[in-house]
Length: 449
Image (cartoon, rainbow, N blue to C red; front, side, top):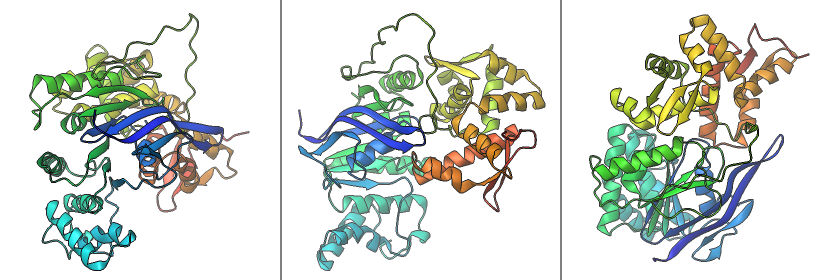
C-alpha cells in the first residue's frame, strides 16, 4: 500500500439551523493515498463539496478528524491546493499575477516566484497569455489559470470541486484529457487528486477509486475501484458496466451502508430488515432536501413520456433513445421523486398514482396537483408559509438566501433560489419581482391567521 496523504476518521459536519444542528456529513472514513485519483461522487446536497473543504482545512469538522501525513489538522491544510468550479480568479490581475498569488502569500521572493509561475503556465498550456486579464479569456482558459495557480505551489494533493462543470462539453472534454495526460506523464507536480463531481462518466473516466455519498444521509454509500487502463475507452464493456453499477447505487433504494465500507468494487449488501410496522417518512429539511436543477417543463415532459410507456422506463435506455447522457436525466428523475410523482426502482423510474394523475391532467389541473406536491418541498413551503405570515404578504429574497446560506455555497444558493422561483411561479403559489428582488404571495393562497 502506498503512503496515506489524507486520512479522515469519523468525520461529521453539521450546520446550525432554525430547528437545531443539521447534519451534512455523518461518520465519514476515507483515506487518500500517494499516486491515486479519488472521485467523490454524489447528487446535489450530498455533502461532497463540504467534505472537500474539510480536507482542505477550510472548515473544521463537528466531530472526527482530518489528518495530513498523520498530523491532525487544526487549520488550513498545508499539503493541498484547490481548483474551483467558478474559476475564482482576481479580475484586476493578469494571468501571471493570478498564478503568483499563492506563492506571494507564502512569502516567496519576486524572481523565483515569477520563474515558478512561468513554469506552471507553460505546463498547463497558457504560455502567451501571461499578460492577459481574466475578462479576455474563454472559460477553458480561465480554468487553466485556476489549475496553474493550484499546481504552482506543488501540493501533495490537488482538490478539484467540479472543475469542468462550468465549461461547454467540448472544452471540458479537452481539458480533462490534457489533465490526465499530464498525470500519466510524470510531470504533474502533485501526488494525488481528489475530484468532486456529480457526473458518473467523468468519475469513471478520471478516477482510480470512486466514493459515492448518499444524497440525503451525509454518509458514504459505496466505494468502487476502477480497474480500467488509461486512456479509457468509453466503448469498452467494463466502462459501461461500471457506470451502470454506480448509477444503480446512486438511484436505488435501501442500499445505504453504515459503518465499514464493503470491499472495493463490490456493491453494499442490503441492510438488515427493520421490524415490521409502518415506516415513518424521513423528515425533510432545507439542508437535506435540495431542489434538483430541473425545470417544470423538463420534469413534466419526462412524466408524459413515462405515461406513454405504461408508467415505467429504464433510465439508461431512455437516455440512449433521447440521445442524452444519463446525468442529464438524473435531475428530472430526482424532481419527480421529490414531488412524489415518481419512484426510482433499481435502474428504472416509475410513475406513482399521483404522477399518473399529474401526467394525464389538463393544464389547470396539473398546476393544482403540482402546487399540492410542491408545498411538501421544504424551500417552496418555507417561502409560501413565510409570505402568508408577513403583514403585507411580501418578503425580500435576501431573507431566504440567508436561510439557505447556512447549508449551501453562494453558487448553490443562487441555483436553489432560481429553481424555487420557477416552481412557485408555475404553481401560482407566489410571484417574484426581479427588479426589487422580492417575493409576493399568490392571490389564491390564504394569508396566515
